[in-house]
Image (cartoon, rainbow, N blue to C red; front, side, top):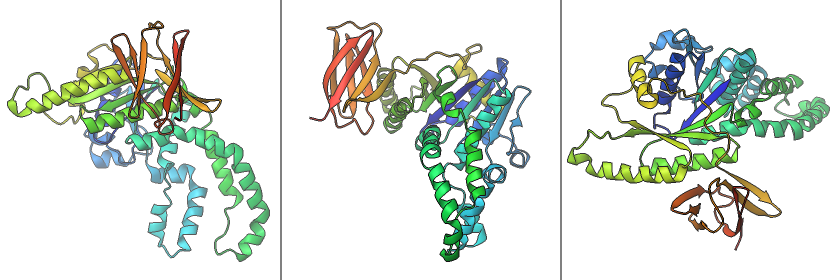
Length: 395
């Protein structure tokens, strides 16, 4: 099974591009599911489905055609399916503060429940072999980072905190419940957590396997949007996911020559140069600004053909190596960068703001640094077996 994860700043067109990708995959014969992981779902709107027809069935995948289905995770139904004990305990605690039942039920929808529910579905569909490809329409960048980091966080909690917490509460619960205004969680609460963790088993390895999961970053040719896309690229790399494509959406087409758009065209051209330099060797695709809103199957088909043509396979594995990695070794930080064609003597590097800039001949590679490394200075570098290792230390 393949997982294609579409991420980017809110409003850049992720949902339309994810839906168009689903149509292309379906046309090529893949059993495809497009799943929305964004709490502010708009996938059904992209297909211009009747609201009442679709939203009554959002607990399960909804068929678009014989090979394509879409799925918007309905958190209320997921709570009844998977989070009953956890939600019931949180609601009971909130009620003691004087909050009414409706408010308590709303507040009991904890951050991450929707994303975890989506992960459980991905794992379930993988085990069942129901789909060949799942396209994930993710929430804006910050929430996407939370989505991909959850398996690691949960695994750490289950190994180091969960057994201790469950054992302690089991021992003190009878006494504490006599004096506490709020009853401590029952063992069924912890059993619910353990069951959820079991349903997520293996999802972390799935997301970090480049032969299975690829990230496609969607951006617009605008300075503010590009900065967030660059940060997303860094953080996906930090979490071990492989970004194999960047899609620049809503470029002014060549047919627009009106003087009114002259500055826009110059600005977009400059930003496109930056995008090509920053993300190389990751492939960059360009999608024009259409004369109409992309809404409904016919226009999604038009977008799909603009993006992929007739025969290009979006599921093809084009990258299995991360473009760079970050490590901490013996008290210092390292950036490792694959440079297959470089030779010693032609590599130069310098630091510019929160970026490490590597030059190979006339080529220049910009590497955004995570926050923990942004204030450090390069101290030494070595090129060995096609890999450039740059050490960074405090001055």
